[in-house]
Image 1 (cartoon, one colour):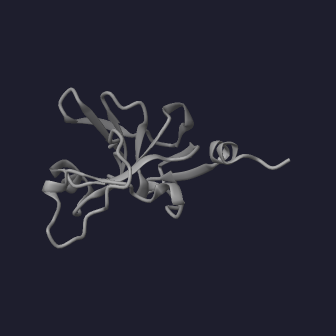
Image 2 (tube, helix red, strand yellow):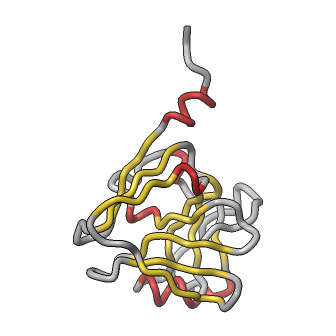
Length: 144
């Protein structure tokens, strides 16, 4: 018997972590609403013109390693972001009203999955003028 695409996606597991390796994680399942964000916070947090996010059900994210991530509010009462206290790698996001946990895609060990290709770009008006914007191929609530 062949597995359906839904079963295959649900069984998919990826690993990731911070630069120093003190925080590791695994995510299971297909990414939800992969997108880039050009808000002023993401640009400063990521040290570049944008950050790349994808959502995963919180129960499908497992954190391991010898250190714990630190959380801070980026938009008071609306959003939290996490990072490794040792090396500073940005890792995750919790946004009010969004059921998925946002994961910084570049923290994954393998970013080649088709379900990680950005489907939109948040805060287009804040984007740098010299970089083409991600086309809006799917309209959903943003994660990250």
